[in-house]
Image (cartoon, rainbow, N blue to C red; front, side, top):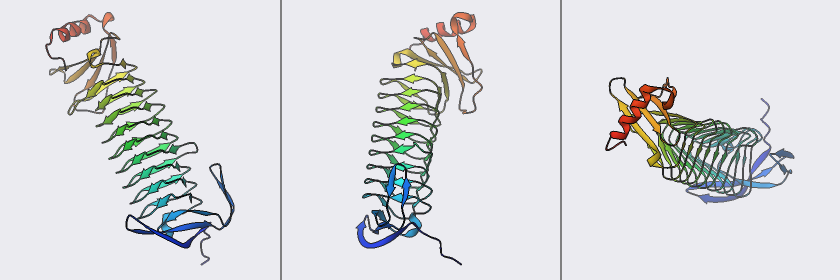
Length: 287
């Protein structure tokens, strides 16, 4: 059987990094990857074994791929980025600067997707689409990032959180639980979101929308203070109501459920929900 052609070879130049012996690679052919022209004979980055690098992917500069990690397709790992453990980077993914991909993370981005700065992707996290992930972002556990999302700053994305569409998460925001952030949502500053579905919402400053056993739903809400959002639970219907004072709106979501059948109400047009607002205002502790 004819041997598979490799577009690179491992050289005798080696180094030990985190207990792994890595070898610098050298290109055997001319090819373009992203906007980079790789010329035959050009030295690249470091890998531990041939199984680390397949397809027409390339490891450049001082980037490192080792362990049982695999980089394939037309992916480019550059600068001082690290891909290790059992992580997979494929497609047209671009990982650079000091980004770190580890665990069983899967990065499968289209052209334009970029992970950079000191972003850290670990656990069973999945990155797909054309997101920009930078800063000191930490994405771990079973979190998923899709589409044209922008994440940067010191954000933390954990648990089973899903962020998609054109959403932006920046600053020191923390997204966790079974949260779904979608539409054109903006989560910024020190906002914390856990177990909430937010569609095209803006959550700012130190606002906390977080529950351990409940699930809330907001659509196009704009909240910049904990004083602007009130949560109210009705035992009879097993529903949780979220009242956004600045908007004059009530949102409903099922308790202990991520399968939402929710509606949006304007309290001025519905006497029943106006009564709920009056009841909320009589509570001494609305949180």
